[in-house]
Length: 290
Image (cartoon, rainbow, N blue to C red; front, top):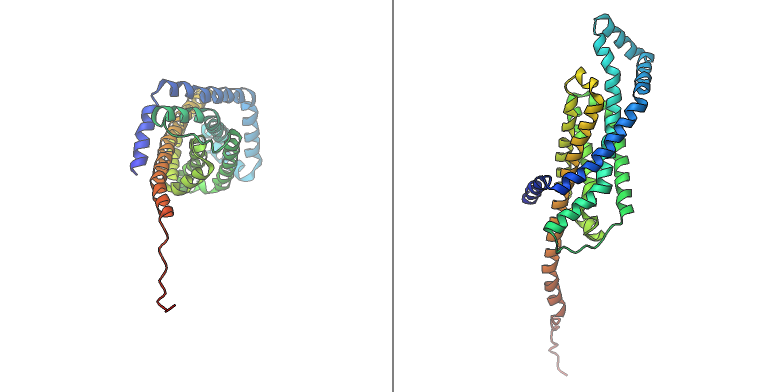
């Protein structure tokens, strides 16, 4: 627990570092440009497709007609844009996470290592393509879990629990791997991720809930739709800040755990060598006569 708290406050302090602020602009700009381009090219077409699909389904069509009958045309108008946003934001969040993992995370790990773990040996236990493959595989699993869990979101408690848990698991798998890829050997990385599985997953879950906070910018109702392009960019900036903090938290925790592991092995190694050089105990002496 002490290691988690220590890594937490260090990560929060590092978020104020000028280099971290500059690095956070890259995912923000990329996802902002992507969101703006998608909105410009496909917003109206996506709205038309969603509305036609809703009208085609008998159940949703009857519900929409009922809204019109009770004078809630405004609510009916909101449903289409909200569905489009609900389908778009997870894609943008995943793109932002991958950009952070592939481009921003190595630089943040290097920053933490140079400022705090300058003497920690770099064993290069994973190449960049291995880290990219690991991130893509974990993202695919998380997407499948999100899609499979969508029906459960209709149950109010599960809607508040399942998405942050899935995002937390994804962050844990991606960022803990990236935090150790440069400095730990493959064997050290596997041991640390096995030994510290629960603390790392706990960090992932906490940051998963932090990642849900940017969605609050859409809680202002119909006004949010009028400023949808701006709010998408703002929410992406908030996601980038959360991911930067998460990357720093995993980096501080992972490198500190790696340093402790090597220190423990350094203490154990001389003891093992002493045992190896000690003479073997003599066997029992036979007392028979010659």
